[in-house]
Image 1: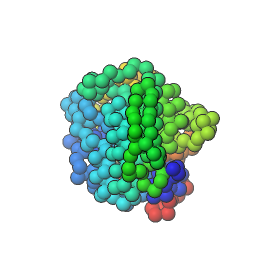
Image 2: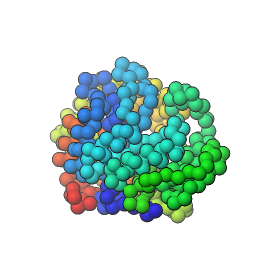
Image 3: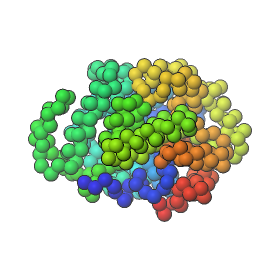
Image 4: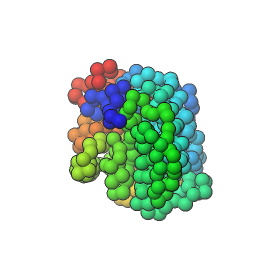
Amino acid sequence: MSARRPQNRMFNRNAFKLGLFSPNCSGGMAITKIPERWSASWDDNRTLARMADDAGIEFILPIARWIGYGGDTDFQGSVLETLTWAAGLLASTEKVTVFSTVHTAFTHPIVAAKQCATIDQIGHGRFGLNIVCGWNKPEYDMFGLPLPTEHGVRYAYGQEWWDIVRNVWTSERAFDYHGEYFNVQGVHGLPKPVGGSLPPILNAASSGEGRDFAVRNVDFLFTVLVDLERGAQDVQGIKQAARAAGRDVGVFTTSYVVCRPTEKEARDYHHWYAEENGDWEAVDRLMTLQGLHAKSFPPDALALFRTRFAGGHGVYPLIGTPDQIADEIERIHGAGFAGSTVSFVDYVKELPYFAEEVLPRLERKGLRLPVGQA
C-alpha cells in the first residue's frame, strides 16, 4: 500500500497543521465549572466539524474515555465513542480528516480493522487512526483487565495488535498470526482502506517505550510541549530515532487557546474559568492518575502545571491576542513541530474568531496556505 493519500488533509502542503482535540468529551479539555463549558453533544460536534471543514483545519482528534474524573462536573464523564462518532462526522463533512482513538486492550484487532476500514469507506479516505496502548487503571478495572505495570509490556501488546490490523488491511490472502498476546488463524478482511493506501496513523507518547513504538509504526507522534527549549530537544531526538529506523515521523504537540482582541481580555477570561472556577477535585484526580499510571507528562511538569491542567488538561497554553497567538505558533513551528491540536472552552463559539483572525496571520507567516490551496 502507498503511504500517502492526497484526499486526506494530514498530507497536505501546510507547513504547520492544526487539529481540534477532545470535542467528543464533556468539558473538552477545560476542567472548569463555568456554565458555558463544552457539552460534547452530537449536534455541537457536527456543527464544529463543518466549521473545521470550511476553515481548512486538517483534523479532529477525539479522546477515548470510559470513566470521568469526578469533581463537581465529572470532567469527561460523558463521551461520544470515537469509532461511531468518526463515522457520523465523516458522513457529515467533505474535507476534514477525522481520527478514531482506539485502545488496543479494549478492542480486538480484527474487529478494529473491520470497523476502521468501514469508516474509511464512509469518509472516502479521510479517516485516521490514533493507537493508544493504555494507561488509565480505573478503566482497566472497569473492563476487568489487569493494567501491565511495565510500559514495555503495553507497547509489545500494542505492536502485535497493530501488526494484525495492518496485515488485515494489506494482505491479499488469509494469514495466521502467532505471537505472545494474539494467536489467530485464517485472518482476512474486506473491504480494505480506500485507494490501496493506509490511513494516517498517530500515537501520543512521551515515554521511551512509546516513542520507540511510534518511530517504528506511525506517521505522526504527539508529545507534550512543556517549554520551547525542551520541545526542540524532544523533536530533535524523535527525528533522529526515526531516521535511524529509516522513517520520517511528523512530530505534533497539543495546546489550548484563549484568543481575544486584547491580552487583558484573554488573561481575565483564562483566570476566571481556569483559576476562579477550576474543578480542582477533577484536576487533582487527573494529575494523580497521570503521575501514577502514565508517562505523558514529565514528573516535574506535573508538579508545576496545576493551573495549566484546569485550563486545558495540562497542554501548552496559547493565551492572548491573535497576533500573540500567531507569533507563539510560529515559535512552536520553529522548535521543529509540524503541527498542534487546539481546544477551546466552547469550540463552536470560539473557533470562528480563531479562524478569522489567527489563520490569516499564519498564512502571512508562510505556515499555512489559504483554504483550498494546501
